Length: 409
Image 1 (cartoon, helix red, strand yellow):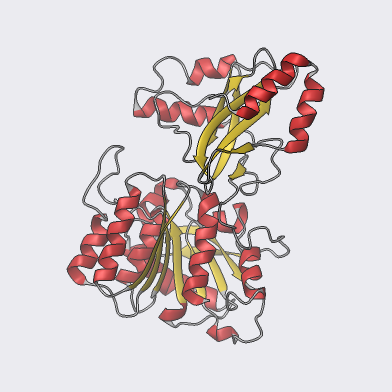
Image 2 (cartoon, helix red, strand yellow):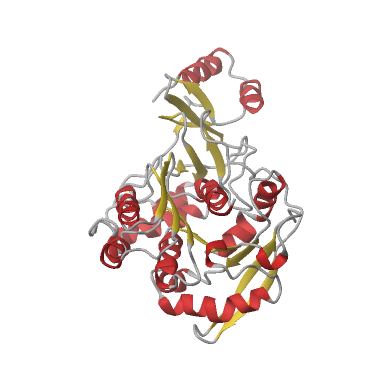
């Protein structure tokens, strides 16, 4: 797609091949370049300049919910004429938000990982993608970063909802502890963050917010400063954040999908350990379990399995297809085991749930809707929302804070 921006840039280069003068215009403007198409649509153009004396065979774009690294053919940027400038353009909604990386690859990397036929099988597609990811970079002309040391930038269209609080500077770090679980037979770090004092909430009455995939919320996208901002502006009570590490992908896939032993260990072992360091309320109606993807599934399971401890759920893009769908292309009944359980057993009294899912998450939208409908039919209080994005930590950070504010604000 030759957008107006690329057409003008091509003409500018043709008229004056001084690449530095041309590129200075782009530096001043910043990237990506966004042009209005109509009331609801914009054209977004990603640009990257190949450094001098750098050999590049192909430049890939990885933009969440725009490109698809599972596809047989990956999305690649195109060179503008004979210049060292590469571009990728697309039309998107003016409310769209995405994290993205640029992946410049020399011929040796392309030959090793993206050889002809590499995209035909699941195993070779995965190997291809993991190999290319080693070469990803953030957009050098975009000051907005999607987390600490992620090599991912932020693409936000003009009408994307404001992500309240996430621009707050990080002044304080979490307290890191080691949780040595005898039940689960593993040690892992957990992080405790006590928000600023609202001057109203006694320490022992502070709500507890459990953050699954806790390393992300403690180190990659530190959530504490955003929660502090919410407290300082009166949106939220003082609270205690408990971020629980997932250890590794294998353990995560075992512990988060509807695992009673995991939550027994959290309740019996971890919560008393944390309470000794940072007092919080034991009231189930002041305890939020939050998670995304498998974590979104786990947070819903926790409230159904341990209703005496957890009455508030903040679920982002929950994997409610589980247990069917572990293999790509499989699909089971809408809402999976969670919806079936709610339809069979009902919902605990006082259960309040916020469910959000991305518009571009394919069948996950239907699975989330099925869980929301089952909850509503069972008498639970549920808010169900669809955001304009994909399976993306960048989108989930506002889902997290907005949901918690709704539940305990």
